[in-house]
Image (cartoon, rainbow, N blue to C red):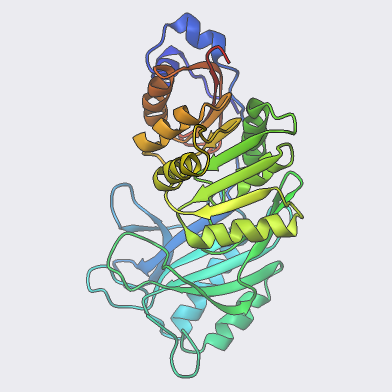
Amino acid sequence: MKRNFRNPPKVQLLGGFHADFVDSVTEPIVGMENPYRYRNKAQFPIGKDKDGNIIAGFYASRTHSIIPVKDCMLGVTENREILDAILSYMRECHIEPYDETTGRGLVRHALIRYGFTTKEIMVCFVVNKDKADKSGEWFPHQKELVEELAKIDGMTSITASPNTKRTNVIMGDTFEVLWGQGYITDYIGSVKYQISPLSFYQVNPVQTEKLYSQALEYAGLKGDETVWDLYCGIGTISLFLAQKAKQVYGVEIVPQAIEDAKHNAEINEITNAEFFVGKAEEVLPEYYADYAKEHPGEHARADVIVVDPPRKGCERSVLDTMVQMEPERIVYVSCDSATLARDVKYLRENGYEIRKVKATDMFPMSVHVEVVCCLHRVNS
């Protein structure tokens, strides 16, 4: 299904350029043939309705009132069976859901992940508890809950993530395995990934392969390039790039994600990808400065830099260092057109020009898209 994007969104996307220019660089949007049942991840808050019944579902818009939902047409059908088992257990064993008003109750959320290629399933309970009790259990009658969930075809991982903070953050900082293993596996193209409860992993695997393939195409790799992948997560784009590059360096602020990235490189026997923990706005400038100290009269360079930042876009220090490293190409993957336009404007003012832009409908039935923008160094 393709969206009918007209000139206003395009103009916003590229920072207010003339429509003729926009049309000349903007490629057709990548739609999805079957825009249903595509989400491999769902996070269901658990609470009570006004009659005191335990429910799971989604928050109503701009509130934390739960609308009971067990089956959403964007999620996998397995979600219903899993939620039925969880809610039945909670009712029978008198397990209280979390109450945001009082801060009491045990179960806050149920996170469900599904591997579209492997058919593996993960369930992670976010619990209002710091640690397991003396018997090693996070829940009363935990064995019965685990046994019921383990009967579901494809169940691979059952975990608990403690979160006692009274904030809007869903997941805790850690997790503990209750049954099976602490991850599921899945593929994007030919690359295999291990995904833990805390991993960032795109929710639409069909469109993700198209998005990453587009980023790889825009990178224009021949096999002898050095590539930096900033905001790399668990190495999803990095490992795609490593198939065609000489060397890839990935940077990510979340330590667990970097551990996942390193492990994902190992299981795919990829040896030309190296990963660093830290903020991109700190790691890249520090690398640039250290290189200059170690190599007087020279400066660090990159052939290609790929960025996939959060909605706030790139920090100015990252953009400054990118320009100083003089990559031939910059591939900018964005989930927010406003910050993309802001950062592209800066890059255009500092020696880069837009060659191509393509949007991918990553979240059908919503207003959100992901965009890949290809910039080349002027006179390179």
